[in-house]
Image (tube, rainbow, N blue to C red; front, side, top):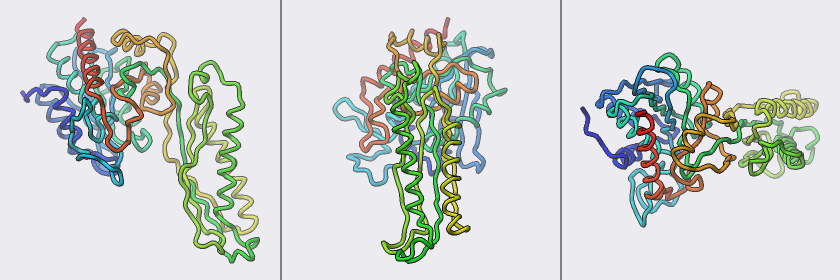
Length: 387
């Protein structure tokens, strides 16, 4: 039997692992596996294609369906270039706040979930509790679908999932979906004095960016559906946040690269928007190739995150509301893994400690009060599962 750690001690251990998305998370995963296994809990791992990263999931309670999943991700965003006041991979408490990379997004919830799983196992709960900790959430929730697929048949199918992204321990019942592309426009260089004989990748790329502006104006003018009206803003947004390319002011640009992303309201389809963009790309590419046949545009899909659609009388929502007393309708415009779970047949809700405004920031923090609220939530959850 392993030493039983407090939720705070587990959180401090998880934060100590620099599990940034561009490196392996295996040291963290191995620690979680060892800790839970030491308490007699069977742990399952699912590795990515290169075996450099893994997700973990586990089940306690009776071997029956209908349990509750506590879902979190193990990766964090980089700290390079950010002005931190202390070591980002060490939890430091100052003035009622806990500082460290991932304390808000979302290793505090991961720690609370691990703590609750051990408590539920010791309590011999009558309804199952599961945890599912993924990789690569921060680069587009790409680790969630294989994790959900791996759980199928390995553990009894749960009916509800609580995704612990920071929501101030309030029930979030819907969020936008998202998809995005890395765009590479390849032109043809000539001296700008004869620019009509070349293909300026930046200027043709600008046509795609202007299309994004046009779509935003078009979407803003729409009358939103009842569900879409809950969001701020209540329309699908198209965004370009970074662009690079060109060689000199007097040479038509050979290359232009930028990322174009969509945040899609539930009443619309991310796939539909992706197809509309592909059609515009084909139109612009045809214009380029009419000048120089070798010019082209390459699209690389960055991510595909389904939205979380508010459920009528959803079980997950009812569970969280019963444990928090929060009855206000609430949706967010950022994405989570909850949409993937919902597509996998789970009732889904987002509820976790902290404020999303602190996520990814230098000196990322979580208030002690929010951590304690999360711990109280988990105690009530375990009591509920006792029956």
